[in-house]
Length: 294
Image (cartoon, rainbow, N blue to C red; front, side):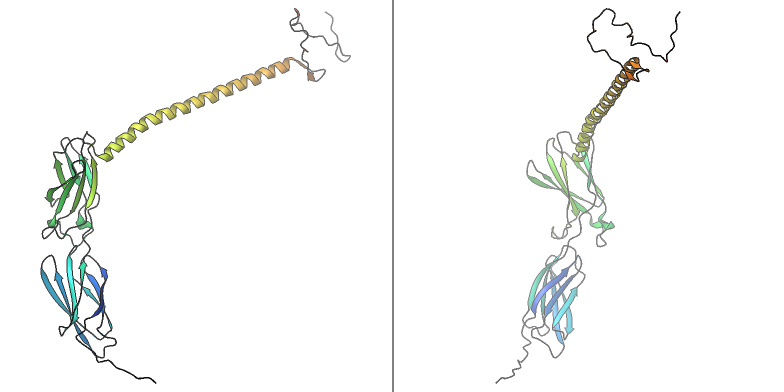
């Protein structure tokens, strides 16, 4: 036995499973399900977006019969904080969630140039890659002293450079540059960070590393050159000695070669030290060699 039961739709129930699908810099895609399955008529939803930074509200209306609803909230601000409320148009129970949009990117190519009594920070304009950034908004610069463990706000500028003075010898600093924060520092861009090692000489760490690399190269290169020259001279000396030994042996062998016997004749060593050891050895006469008597 079985029985079929059809539930009476309750329009006072809240939307189900409200969540964020994707969040960008200026938009957010949200998704939810109807209060009950398979609505048999169009349902009107009210989507309220509260800006927690600016303290403003916006309400959007969505009319659909789908069980699953996906909606894109536009015209948001980078780095903003929002409270989203979704409920049926009859002001039934609500579902809510919080959304934080993606902040502006960090400035690219942050570099330091060291001058006599100050340094200059340089970076690329954010407007080159962020269409939502206006140069009139400007940038703000912070400095962290690792020795004193202090973070200081240095100021803001609408230019792409900033001058920093009164740095202490022997201190290490970290500089950050980001899109200027709006509304009491609640909407900021991502910071670009650069380490600066004062090293007691006011040098940029990259410049110091370059200098040390240059010094090492200045020592290593001459040493390698001298080693190569020494090896070359050694090979030449060995080659010359080998040639002399070869020539000496050839001359020695030729001086003891007998054309009659077709071989070289060497002394046995018994006659070494004799007075006439320099006299030529007489080995006899051959019939085919004519004798000439003066």
